[in-house]
Image (cartoon, rainbow, N blue to C red; front, side, top):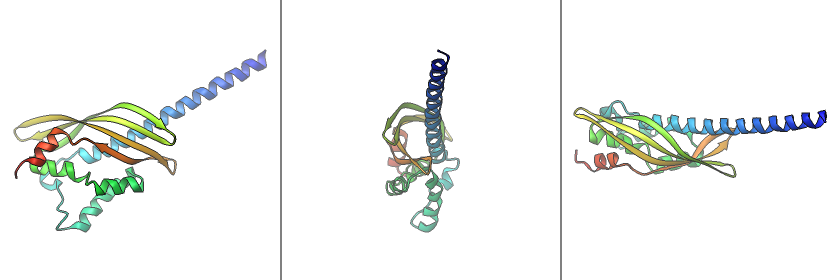
Length: 171
């Protein structure tokens, strides 16, 4: 009887540790997304925010290398190809405002084989000289393990109304 009790306790401890490991993995993936989006969207100076890629293409692409740490190679190539970093920079420059992430809420977390899929909402505040505007952006990131670390292999988002207004405004 005592032996079966010990086996049962060992089984429960294994389940507990496995559960904690999954929670820690999910937490690490979420933190990566928070760091990436905060780095992408916190723009403090719109005058210097939008890099002129035509006059200094080498310097422009070198500045984007800071984002490599968040992505798989394929994910980084998509990030560059889709010009993801340019959208908030150009919106701030054209709209003449700074931008700040005020919250990132994870709406849904799913697992598929070796992938973690995070649906999330980014709350943003644009600060103009005449006031402030807030908006939200719906996004989804797909992360995979690479060298025992989570990396983003795909990040998609809807261009929010604020960015649309700024990108369509005349300068």
